[in-house]
Length: 106
Image 1 (spheres, one colour):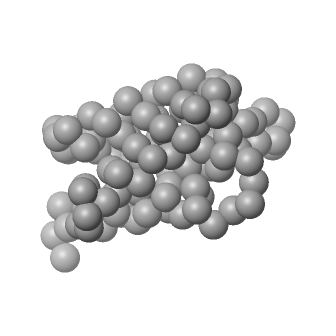
Image 2 (cartoon, rainbow, N blue to C red):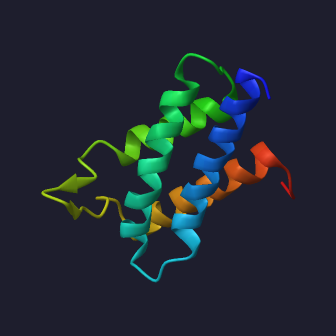
């Protein structure tokens, strides 16, 4: 597998893990967004120098919004400071990104 293939595989894994954080936990959505933000932050780092696309730009935008505040303080997960309406919109946008990037209904 090429370096680019490895990078895309890792990016797919990170975006998939962000989606998984949103859908498999019973934690409040703002906590699930904190967990997803961790993976989006790593994905932003992967794509920073290697991929210029609308998907990468949207990941960066979401990651920026979700990581304005620390994800953890003294090993405690910090729920994102967003309204319930915004939390739902961010979760939907993350799912839409995954669907757009890796196939499925638009």
